[in-house]
Every structure is written in C-alpha cells, then in structure tokens.
Amino acid sequence: MKILAFDIGGTEIKYALCDESFNLTEKSSVPTNAHDGGPKIIERVVEIIKSYNGIDRVGVSTAGQVDSIKGEIIFATDSIPGYTGVKIKEIIEKETGIPTAVENDVNSAAIGEAVFGAAKGCSDFICLTYGTGIGGAVYLNGKLFTGSSFSAGEFGHMVTHAGGKSCTCGGCGCYEAYASAGALVRMVAEKTGRDMNGREIFENFENPEIKAVIDDWIDEIVVGLKGLIYIFNPLLVVAGGGIMNEKYIIDEVNDRLQKELMQSFRKVKFVKALMGNDANKLGAAYLAYKL
Ligand SMILES: [Zn+2]
Image (cartoon, rainbow, N blue to C red):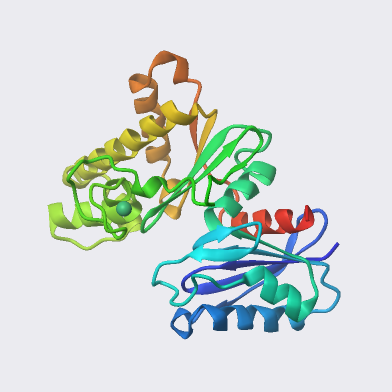
C-alpha cells in the first residue's frame, strides 16, 4: 500500500510517501502561505496528491481542531484564516477518489508515538508539546480520547495561575503562558533583558541568573503535569518540542515528580518524544492505513 502523508502547519505543508512498513520516503515541503486562506491550502494539497501516481490512501495531520470522523476543521485560530469549516476529507476524496484520514496534529503525533515511538506498547499515556504554546493529546485504554467535540487535551489552556497572565485563548493564567518554551523565552528576557531563543538559553545554562529562571520554569511545567497525572494516572508523559532535547529538563521534571506526587502515582515517567518531525506524518499515515 502506498500512502501519501501530510503535515499541515501554519508555515509549512510537509509531506512524504509512506509504505506498508511505515518508512517515510521522498520527504518534501511547500510553504503553507496561510494568508491565502484555508480552502487554498487544501487546493494545494490536492495538486500535490495529483502529481503522484498509484497512491492508495492519504493521511492528513493538521493544525486546528478536527472532527476526525467527517475529516473537517471544526475550529482554527487566525494563524490560518478561513480554515474553520474546511471539509478536508470530502474535498480530497471528491477531487482524487483516494480514501483520506484527517486528524489534529498533536493527536497524530500521539498516534505516531503510540505505534512507533516513545509510547510503543503503552496503553495509557498523555502527550504534551512544548513550543510557542502547549498542545496536548490523551491516549487511554489503547486509543485516542478525543472528547465529546473532538477537543480533549487542550492542556495549554488549563489554568494553573488564577487571575494570572493573559493568554491567546482570551483567558488568563493558562498553563502555556507559564510553562511553554515561549514562556521560558519571555521569562529570560524579563529577568536578563536579553532576547534569546531556547537553544541560546541552554547554551548559557552556567549563568546563575539564567539557571534560576530555568529552574522556576521547570516548576511551572511540573505544576501542570501533577494535575494531569492525578486525573489520568498515565504510565508515561511523552513530551515533544525541540526544547525537550535538553536532558536537564527531562531529568529535573522526573526528579520533582518523584518527590511531589502521591506515592501511588510515582510509576509515571516523563519521557522525550522520539519520532520528532515525523510523528505527525506517521500517525496520519497509520490512520489512513487503518481506514
Ligand atoms: Zn489560554
């Protein structure tokens, strides 16, 4: 079976061919040109599909909240204007005749990690991606838990600070305003007056002022995780996002969880996602394969 897997983000549409053994080949990407609007993006995806011969299935991982049964976007922020309501599955199937699976990007990544990566063989885990914001996915009893309206796992917007900093969601005190990689960058800039990205921050790890900020930020990560661990009692917390390549974060979060969690929850491990940028495409390809 030949599957074409897409990962639609705010800046790039990445895609690759995927065989039955789930090897990704011919990886490629085009700019999303999000300002052209949602429908145009799917037009571009259809053009790409038509440029291949012999494709049996299409798997789409995409930004935005997705009704994975109908394969349409139920809500997307203004980062992709006009994306809300776009019927991705219907359009692709009508234009190409190829059966298509569509899933939200963090959910796709969770499937990718569950089938091929850090959570292989694990039936109960949660996934969080620490980037500009914080995305989340819930995997329970061996399958994705998507909630009553396909929106479960918005961990970035659970409130960890009542009345705290304002957030892009319109609320305030949200987890992602304190614990995302973006929040760390802001915290370091406030403390030191220097604008550094995540990599630069960790290159200056020996600077006591910066290390203190990192340690405070890790406390923010742990505060949110404790709540989630008490709710879901997962065996694993899989953490994605480039910043999680810093071993210090992984080790510290595990240490603090072991000290702070009630004893019966301490089996949990905080681990780095393993599939990197391929997780979304592999998850979407797997869902397409299972159609
Ligand atoms: Zn929020």
